[in-house]
Length: 118
Length: 111
Image (cartoon, rainbow over all chains, first blue to last red; front, side, top):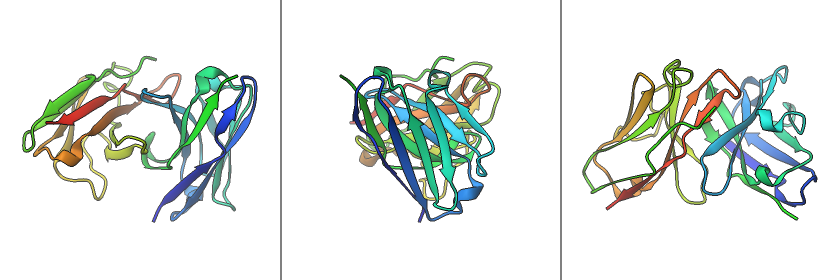
C-alpha cells in the first residue's frame, strides 16, 4: 500500500525556517517525480516544487524560489522541503504528492500545517 | 498564470447527474490532455478521480467521467450519492510559471 506521511509543520514567525519531511512507502520511490503542493485555508491547491526521481532536476513556484529547497534521499525513501524566510502568505497545509504523470497526483500525504504568524 | 475557473457550488438530488465545468486557456487546458480532477472531503487530502481528461484510477467509481472541449474541461457524476458530497478541484498541466495549475474548487451538495 502506498503511503506518504508528512511531518515538520508548525507555527513559525515571519522570517523563520522550517523543514518538512515526507516518508514514503509501498512503492519504488526512486523512479517517481515527487512534488510539494500547498493549500491555504479555503483555497484551491497550489503547486510549490517538484524533483525528479534521481534528484537531478528541481523546479519551483516563482514566489518561493530562493527561499525553499526541495530535496530527496532515495536510500531513506524520503522527500524534504527546506523553507527559509517564511512569509505570512506561505501559511497553508503542505502536502507531498506522487506524480503519476505530467503533474497529476495519484497519492497524497495527509498534509502538515505551516502557520506563519508573529 | 491565473487559476482555472470553476463554479463555486453545484447541487443535485440523489440519482441525478451533475456536471462541473473548469475553464482555462489555450496555454493549459486547451494545449494539453493532462487535465485531472480531485475530490476533497473536509480535513482530508485531495483524491485523484480523473486523469488525462478521461481516465479513472483503479478503484474510482464508473459514475465519474471526464471530458474536454477547447479550453474547458468537465467532470460529470452520474447517479449522485450522498457520499459524493465534497469539494472538487480541476487541474491542468501547463507550460509557464508552474507546471500545474488548479481551479478554485466547486462545492458539491447532494440535496
